[in-house]
Every structure is written in C-alpha cells, then in structure tokens.
Image 1 (cartoon, rainbow, N blue to C red):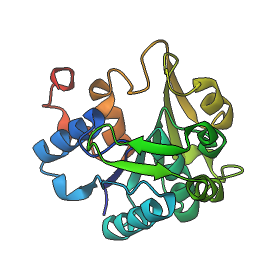
Image 2: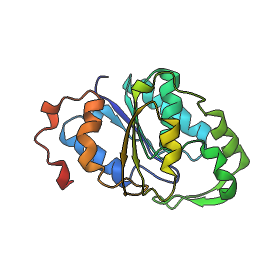
Image 3: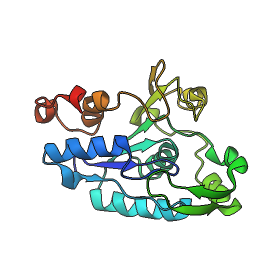
Length: 202
C-alpha cells in the first residue's frame, strides 16, 4: 500500500506514547488511518518481530518508523525486506546494554510488569545487522540531549545514512510533531495532502 507507515515503539513503551499518538492523529485527520499500524509490541523480541512481520504483510511495503529499541527492530526488518526506515534516537546493539537491566521491568504506559531474561538478550543479539546494504533507504533523527542512549553510537553506525542531528532535546525526541511533514514525505505522502495542517499546534 503506497504511503503506508508501520510505527514501532521502544522498550517499555506502547501505542499510547506521545509520538505514536501524534502520528495516529495526523493520519486520521488526513483520512489515512487505514494505512498506519501501531502495534502494542510484546516485550520478547521474537514475539515482537512476529507481530511486526504480520503488520508488514498487511501494509505491503510500509515506511518503518522506529523509536529507540523500535529503531533497532526497524533496521533488522528494513534489511530483511528491503524497506525504507526512519529511525528516531535508535538503539544500537541494545543487547550489550541490557545485562544491567535483567529482572523485573514495568511498562511505562500500561503498568504491565514482566521479567527481562537472558533469553531476551540472546533474541536481541540475533537481530543485529552487521552492516547496511543500502544506507539511502534510511533517515536517522538524533537529538544530542538524549538521556537514555548516547547519540554518538547511532551517529557512527548510521554514518552513511541521511542523518539529522539536533542539539539538545531528549530521548522522547522534542519537537517530533513539527517534523511530521518530513516523515509523511519520506513515506510517499504528497505535501498537497497535508499542507492545511498546522503541525506546530499538535
């Protein structure tokens, strides 16, 4: 489906996160809600990838929009399926960071608790992409004030891609709504469709 988008949320996040809600709101206002999927991802990477594979099958060839851990998932899926991906403060090699996080976790939005195990870490490691086949399929949006991930890791890994590095900000990516026209354009949705929307008011 042309102009379709698959939004992939991050670790302990949910479809009720701010960026996801802003994207859903815009797509619905444009009458394109049927072209967007924002699945509530299972905490286990293998389950999550299965959910995302099904969403890709439904949408055809969507733009993958991944935030944080979702950016890591999006990179894996973009390489597997030859899709375009827009990554927002993406995690790089998250399995190397999670050893200190083993044990009980709590989803920030749903309050669900679950156990982060070595099997989660192993499953994440299995998704690692050693190198990108076609960096031109990617846009990577980074904010240097990200308090959760060191933006320089993504800057290095995605150095051959179209990088947009903004000073300041945070892990949630401040000002996301104002950047939605660029996201829609990258997804193949023409400016004539959304030019009446005041994105700064979102």
